[in-house]
Image (tube, rainbow, N blue to C red; front, side):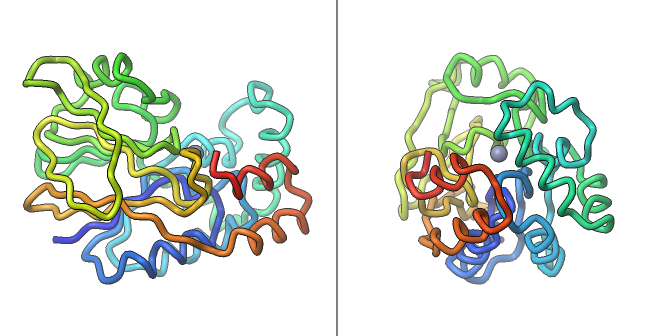
Amino acid sequence: MRVLIFSDVHANLTALDAVLKDAGVVDKIWCLGDMVGYGPDPNECIQRVQSLPNFLCLLGNHDVAALGQIDTATFNTEARQAIHWTQDALSPENLDYLAKLPTTLEFDDQITLIHGSPRNPIWEYLINERIATQNFAYFETDYCFVGHSHLPAIYHLRDGHAYAHLIAPIFDQPITLTPRAIINPGSVGQPRDRNPDACYLILDYESAIIEYRRAAYDIAAVQQRMAAVGLPERHIARLKIGR
Ligand code: ZN
């Protein structure tokens, strides 16, 4: 079974479509949350994924913010601006779609899917070996896929000991996972690893082999749509530099 795994689409339909096309034929599609926030196409992205067969999506922190379930005073001015724009733009049906998303999914004792971290599914950034090490105690499956940081990364338990070791992903090359590991597929709609191309991975479910891939897309077109609706300048600029 071939599974397309991605995260953090952030209302960027052009990047999402580039990934769906680049990935080719897959049996399942799993999205690790943050379908909306930052980008200009929140309704269009939700409609697109709803049209996909075998699609599953998790709830992310920006989805929670769009639902108005948190106090946006904790966000910086630009982030708050983007959240308020997204809240106004989303149709009642699409808000309802976000409201029903799960925070965790588990398959066959083998795989856990989460947006942030196993310890704190919505909010924690799993961004270094120390945090990864602690988080292995909070899930039981062989593998856990997380998003949220927008940084492609694999943390695996070194020599079976409870110490996470970071492996920088190599692209376009099969990587065989060994239990146990935490894997981040990077971000579709707002990459932050200094590569602006949309980032995703393909999982061969039975053999636990993953392959990281990048899909180039028309960034200028997305930037124009963001400017047209008055989204923050800094969020527009960062798409092109990928950070
Ligand atoms: Zn995000």
